Amino acid sequence: MNIVLLGSPASGKGTQAEILCQKFDLFHLSTGDVARNLAETDPRIKEIVTSGKLIPPEEMTMHVLDFLEKQKTDLKDILFEGFPRFVSQYEALDNFLKSKGDDLDIVISLEVPMEVAVKRISSRWMCSKCGEIYNTETKPSEKSGICDKCGSPLIQREDDKPDSVKTRFDYYVKNTKELIDYVDGKGKLTRVNGDRSIDEIAKDLENIVREASKNDHN
Ligand code: AMP
Image (tube, rainbow, N blue to C red):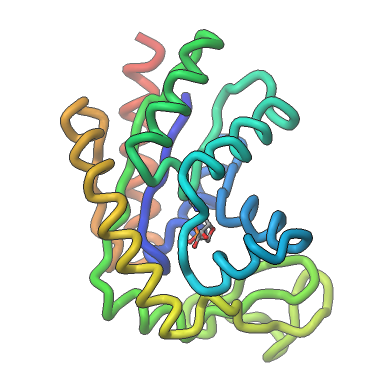
């Protein structure tokens, strides 16, 4: 079963993706992580990512397909987080999977209002070394400002500063609306209210995936 989890910045998609991957033993492909890795060695991508803009759609598709060819050749049980964001990316991924005898099964859109996104982001922190994500409201580290996993200092991501968040939110709404309508038209879209507790959302997502996997095995 291959799943796409879409959501604006700070919709909680990263947190929910981790929970879903653990519950259903899925391979987690976060294109935000792929982009941030590329940014470490490519100043142009670094500028795009830190300012909250999007990498050109075809270029990002190329990186994702390249990643799959190298790191997930069986193409089974993948949770795509943050990809596709455009109809062109959806079609490229769908065609790629179909050419290998596989498919995209469900697309979940986790939705929150912009004010909620901006407020949430201001409490998000990341480990400067291992990348673990913390949230001072919902997932604080044991020692303030220090990563529980590796003991390194926590920092705020450049693209999590309020101006970048607003840019990312605007881009998200503008660019993914077309994709969301397109996927809806195919009957594959499930919208989930992301303005609730982590547990409530996780429960909903679990039910959606269980339901879809029943159909997948039929
Ligand atoms: P995210 O963590 O999903 O908000 O992604 C962080 C950044 O990675 C985005 O602001 C983009 O610069 C880049 N990125 C991630 N996914 C995509 C995508 N599907 N298309 C283009 N750029 C992307």
